[in-house]
Image (cartoon, rainbow, N blue to C red; front, side, top):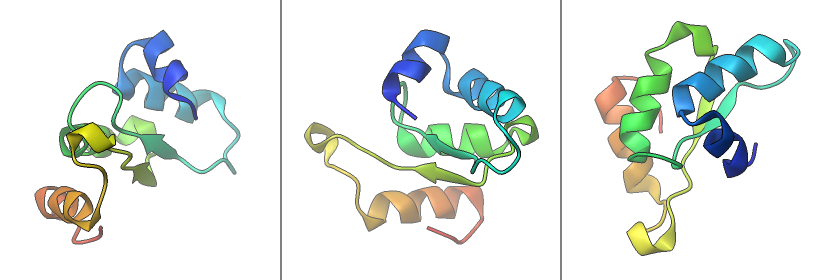
Length: 85
């Protein structure tokens, strides 16, 4: 899903809820989480809302902010308690 969808809706959580509501059940619930806030903060916010049906997040940090690497995933997994990065 493109960044533009998040920009049109204006909020990552509302985008995830709408995606879950309108997409077919067989569509993977994978959300991009770098459009508005810190990836870890957004991951936790979306994962905490059951109405998103969230299965995974895509960490896509721009290079000017250090890029995505395993540390970002580990930080997100550690803060959510999932243990999965």
